[in-house]
Length: 441
Image (cartoon, rainbow, N blue to C red):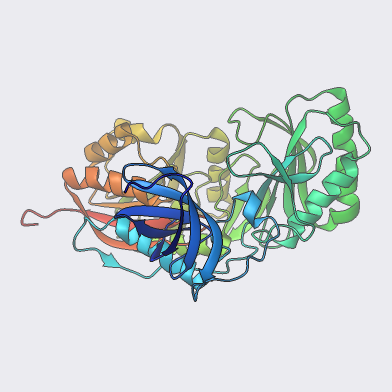
């Protein structure tokens, strides 16, 4: 009999998906149920039936998995930012490692290294909060525009400093009439405890500027010894054309990364998990295996974190960083100069046109967005024809897709290591090394 929506079933779950849902089988079809995990026996109600999969909602746990734990966040069920707070972190990391290996299962001969993990709590050095009409900081519920207030104790993914920034923002703006076009608050913290914060408004009206002045006063009064710089922005954080105005302090945040001191502007990309990012960059340098006299390209280089690491660890090699974000390139150039790294250069441009300069690279490092490489980028890699490619991915599915294209063009995956850059969420990074196939390979 065909499975129908609304039916209730008691099932035993045998696996956990990368999106934090338990996986069981019903009439031979994969069934996914959020809030369950491998080892659970649970009663569920069917919510959607497709040809190849079924979605269900948890009604009750009959027998809990040994990996199950009580969520340690009061808004876990509503928020949707975290997907794994109902199981132990060790089980989550195991699930993510299996997901990455599964995505690359079609490729033979990979030397796998174990997943790298660090603390699953308070690891994010950046936060972006939505502000409601009363200027209370929070998040949007998953797949909605419904505002959820930040818990009084703060978000478990963030250091306590971010809850203080959010609280002082609310206190400073609470006296203003509701409805000012102030919509978001972004903050970034360095390893030494300094921070920059940005108040985002849709339009910089006189009232908004007055509110920003009071916000600045409250920030300095309560957190002055940790304020590196405060900014007012016209446009939302995700807007690539947002305009920033410095209100007070420095025009960037300075952070220590491995042996480097890095300048990070408000709009620049920078990895949010400092400890994992350091180890990821060490692995990238290991996989790049730059020898004296060789050259490397760091595509999608951002503020130059990976490229600068490569150049610093391989002083007899040369590195070129390419990035389309002009602000990030400016930071990268300053970072190279301030760290006295002379064997790297940066240029602003589309990474997919990297071969246009007619240069040869022995190794190319790519760190594309979640959607992976464009066909143009993969074609450019083929024309560049480096001996080695190091691919840093935040999406196992697009990594596998792009690796298949590169395999058809003459490269094979030789080494791989997952990194849990975003514990408790449904994301997992991976670094792979690809080498040109030999004539007999």
